[in-house]
Amino acid sequence: MQWLLLIPLLLALLWLLGNYTFWMAPRPRRLPRLLMYHDTSDGPGSGMNIAPDRLMTQIQWMKNKGHRFVKVSELLDRESENCVAITLDDGFASNYRELFPRLRKENIPCTIYLAPHIEGIDRLTPEQISEMQASGLVEFGAHTLHHINLKNCSDEQARQEINDSKQAVAALSGAPCNSFSYPFGRFEERHAEMVRAAGFTSAVTVKKAILPITDPFRLPRIGINGAANRLQFHLAFTRGRYKL
Image (tube, helix red, strand yellow):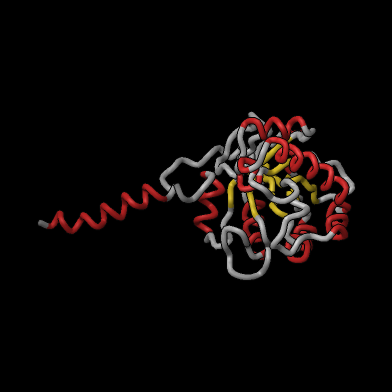
């Protein structure tokens, strides 16, 4: 009956195999990684917030592994082997106050996707956006005007949100707005076509994967939870996610 003692261990092993990715083969190192973040305030980490020092620790780890940092637009313009693109959605003011000084010190570029009329967050100001753009380290993409779920609105409204956000972000930054982020990662084929027709050259999703760039309007991203420990971050960075 000693085999009965193994049952809890077997169940625990099956649970781990069914929930975590440590058993999966790492994705090729040469493939580009797009990392997704949001708020960068000091405080407890979550799916929407990461402490800036923790993010910089992750960046240092990637640098030590020999990865190069680029903006999203540069993934399409140059050889993207071993490249990492840091992306931040929504346009939190903490991206300027807490993170930007650290990125500037280490000369790390990033791409921030603005939803200019988003409510309920402390937003970047026009002056902050202008300063970040002028640094040459930050490019700004669009995230619709109001951070709406494109699948929940009419085609006319979706098209207007996409087109108007491109113009609004360009006006705020004083530079062309060429990349788009689908709010909540929710979109259909017709929305990707609207983004293309609006003149964007790329769009990012929330699909957790590490893949070759075959469709610039469906770029996958690795969502990084601000509470992730070093092992979880390593699994996410090498496998695309740390949980199945």
